[in-house]
Image 1 (cartoon, rainbow, N blue to C red):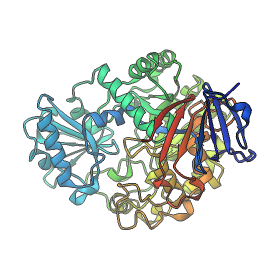
Image 2: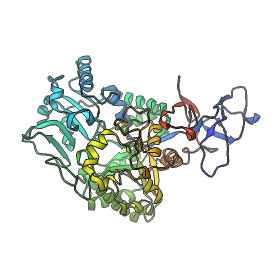
Image 3: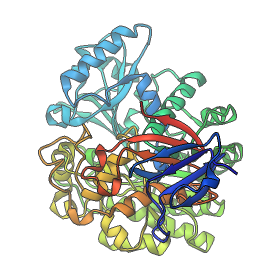
Image 4: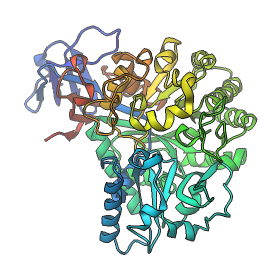
Length: 551
């Protein structure tokens, strides 16, 4: 039977055990031939032959940790994420958004970076200078902080007498007055002021995000928190179900249902009901997301030893959002109900608590075949690195962060101190210890382009193409060069490894006969590129259909 598409003269990315090939045929939704040269039996009057002239043909990337609806919503609100890291530029953008959206009762948005401000954090006074008559509520790029103006604080009832909530912190000045920055659960009160987004708005955000992800070669993803109370989001399960039912989902989507820490094990019946409702042609949910700590930059990541040089009023060892004993109970409960557990752990104490919890999950099931995973892993105690392989736990890494950006050098590393600085993002150590690896972006925390992340994973520096690689050393001095991983490890983590944890490895993640034709064409050969991030995706194919073509 003639093929619909034939890609030839390709630098073909195959499993390491495969024999050499440079040609792939696609018929309908599937890959129907992999070989050398164009077999005339593949050609028919309608066959499109694509001569790649040595450029790379890869499996479609799969983002193993991303928040697409939040990413799409950011572009529909006051979006600071694409701007230079500049205080004045941020304020001008907020003022312009407020001017052009006079009917919005709350100016909401996201995407600011702390390194744009003296001392690493913005203030309410800055926002008051451009918008004082209605609340302004802006999530940081990492989603762990909110920048609010005085009117937002007033309406939320936050003042000098307000105590820090459990699991959160109100940033204060020397007189005890809130400065306008709220961390973790402290921002719930201001986020509650943002009017709920209707189904149409959320659907637009999802489809806008999907197009952005397809443009960088992502043909599948894991939404790392369906129902996550961050980025100003409400529950998005119905958004996915509606888009899937309408045939609008192009990508393979694995959803991770959000575990609400304060509700505890009593929520399991609701979780089970949501899983039962979430089955469609392109959507499935087999995973639950559990958040165990925050981030190092605001001292909410849970550490074994105290932070260095901590600001007044912060917990010296950070926050564990779930008591470790309860966490083990939760993990075992989820495992007994056939869920994989996707855990957020940044600090070394949180990583240990999550591994202990997943040990309980493994014991509850009696094997290590589940696809449990721990994401982020900024700091891991050396004693815990071998436990990933022993427990069959996947290290879900966000490699784009592993470089010497000015925000990391000036805000984060001084809090860690030299001992922990020396084991920052220990990806190479995890690989050498036999850990499974998957990769994701955490977009909109950082950009979703896998090529930028792969460059950083391999070189531990920022790509020249990445405008957020800011600082004198960000693009030239590796962050712990020994923790780099090979190109094969990185590419496999963004394809086959991510396919495994998103439960679609039988259909995608590698270029093999019988698998879905989820393919991407680059503009050059990735194996010889000096700066991988400067490559671009020319064509994205999902299920045999070309869904993105660069003009």
